Length: 154
Ligand code: SF4
Ligand code: SF4
Image 1 (cartoon, rainbow, N blue to C red):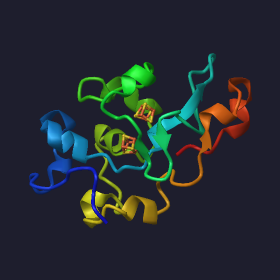
Image 2: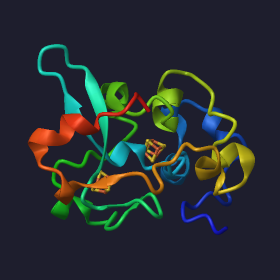
Image 3: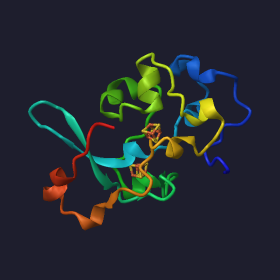
Image 4: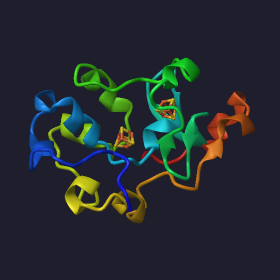
């Protein structure tokens, strides 16, 4: 399977470096392609706790687990947050618990199923860690009903 996240010609083991030391290509290559961050979320106004739902963002293709318009996604989804080394510290707490950026921000290692560890671009899906095939389209559910689709922390 071809990896649509470029991971060639990068420093060996770069993912063990602090996030602030990564080059832009290394930063992009850190993504495991799970698509979990593109699930719509609900936040408890009182506690600030974030809950993931099975409802995918309107641009999420849950066959590929990729954004359908990644380059110009902000035109379609202005609220989409672009992760950077500068903002990861503030954002990490609501990213999925398996997210490579969150894990590295917390000083934790990548999981053994991460494509950078396995060398296999399909290993995230094979480990049951991607959203492939189980999301509900945003347009199918009224926002008032999103809480019926809350899932366990990802
Ligand atoms: S949750 Fe993290 S690792 Fe998974 S697709 Fe989103 S940014 Fe990439
Ligand atoms: S706009 Fe694209 S990258 Fe942003 S949440 Fe939606 S699918 Fe994900």
